[in-house]
Length: 130
Image (cartoon, rainbow, N blue to C red):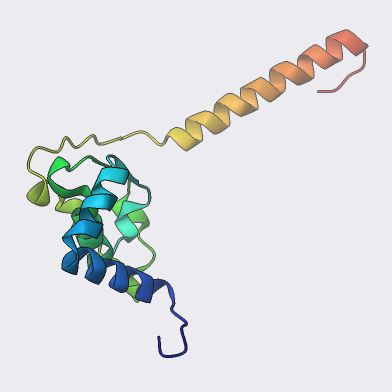
């Protein structure tokens, strides 16, 4: 910071300090961001989550998506346990477990669509594509 350079971790720490020390800044950010979406929630660390909680405030309008089996940033402090304990922080939260891998279904739908398109091209052009 003495050279006026900060990295991502510094940004999170400084943001947390600012929101903790300045109620006016915290209120302004809470007013600006009424709803918070967190993707890859399994890769959040404690400082990031504490900062999110400050911004969310009493409204607690947080929508988080994550898969604890896909946590890959433990080496830099991510804690999938934060995601798993979300209901302890926000007792009114609704947890929706998705037990189907929708990426695979979408891929199969795209493959089916590709087959249909290739079939249509074959019929239109009278050339064998498949």
